[in-house]
Image 1 (cartoon, rainbow, N blue to C red):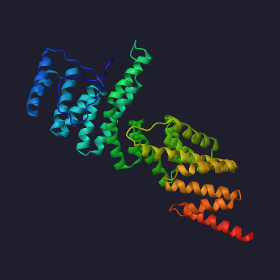
Image 2 (image 1 turned 180 degrees about the vertical axis):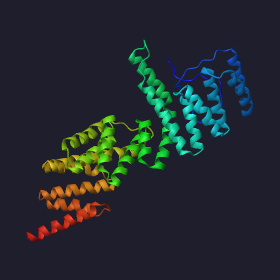
Image 3 (image 1 turned 90 degrees about the vertical axis):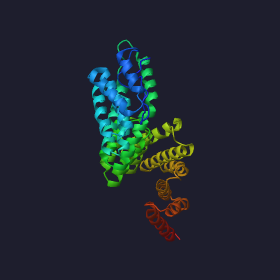
Length: 376
């Protein structure tokens, strides 16, 4: 199997998670002067002794693969000494030689995290994301069957997953602190399919929604869906937005049905408890059914609308605002059908909840009461 990365014969203290091999493959033949020099560096008892020997090794190997190895060793030693300027200096040198060196990228992010430098976390986190994305896009080497290459790449990516996810988590924590459109976009471009990406997407959508930038919201959601049609969170937002606006009902219906279909076979993400997964998947399915109900209302098919709202009702109990909105939709649809007793029950329940739909529900309840008084 082809292994992508730096073969190092030294065991140095690593402040960051040990990275799977990704980058240039360097082999050191046993018994050579380089092997003996590297062994001496490794066996030196203090970082200062290691650095003295490494300075001599680096002077003798100013370029090529041995220079890359020297730069990576400088990064590791200076990281153990918490000398972050030197970590960045030699890390940048290593990446200039080997832009796909995952170990160096991880170490640089670790240094930035320890130094609490948001700017450097973004810079080096982006570099790690770019090297992973480049690797994913690599075509098979000449003479290697496509299926074999795909399997080898996936095996290497699986081995590197803990380190890649660690970097993504550090960068996302910085994003959560920054809370800007630029930082969110930068994170999603660097890590388009990480375990944190859906949270970033939701933050971005909420940001646009709060600021009333509906055109930006729709453009963002459509872009994410185009990148990944199986993104359940984005399909939920697309169905919700379009059904709420009452426009492009076919697309709203397609997105809602896509969510229901995807959730029927979806599995719990790693790191999520059963209770968390149930809450999330129920909420998404409930929003999809509520969106479908609103589509049916606009299509003048109230019977189907009521059925969809009823399906959504128990699924949305953990989301007060979405639950109240669905109750209001159900109550108003039942009122249009002159099923006033059922309408009042739904609206009274919505009116008990502290949401923007309380006043709307109370207003419709008053209207129903007035209408009932007139018919007596």
